Image 1 (cartoon, rainbow, N blue to C red):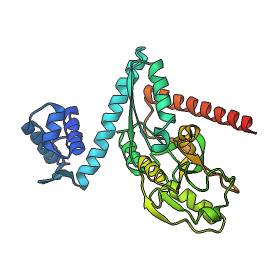
Image 2: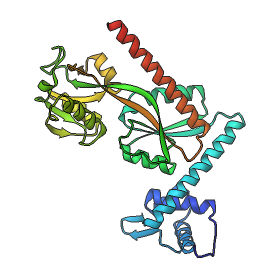
Image 3: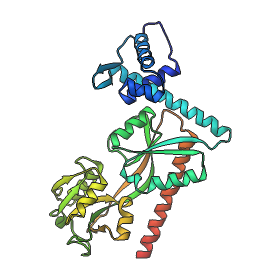
Length: 318
């Protein structure tokens, strides 16, 4: 720093984050409900005090420089901590208020998270739950900066950022699914060698679901089946399956109701079943707000309820 200033005002931090979020002075000003010159002036003040250019200006908008990315990351974390402090004070005053922002992959969006959110807001009417569904990398990035409080998804095989950790919630089955018109329906357990010759619509390669399926085929000495259609959209995958003799792989949680209603048929496989874990990620560098803790607890309750229901159904089937 130049030495002219040693601290920022809260308003400067809010302006900095708003410009980074919107990549635009105009949109940031609209969101903050201030004039565009005021936003421009504030950014210039911060850049002068930092002695560095924080944004590249172009017709496409405001793009953070390497200096800007660093400062914005810390600024977001500071705003997140301030929000948590306000929520904690409200909780200490006996007000069941606050906001918890949860990011999820499709795993949690289908059943686990909606159920927990509905039950939690019913128990605490003053609590607000915001749910964002994104790709896994984007979700963890938002968690690091404090834009999200929790992320629901599969455990990562990669080394996890020391600022993040996860808590196991649920072990889910992975099922081979098809439309009710598929020729392999109702034929009992099918060997993987036969399934490898079928047409598949799959998630993108190196997606965690794709990798889990690959490992199952490799365990049987088989190559991954061919894939002429790849999609990260569960809606698109289901639409392709309805076109005819296509197979795909899903966490049971996503298609359980479809299987029960007969809209999708599970193709049972011979040999070892496929499973994976569902976890919640959270930051280790900051304390969880009361709202976040309440959501974490509710997710654990719902996950246990699902687990007990699965065990009961499995026992009845046997």
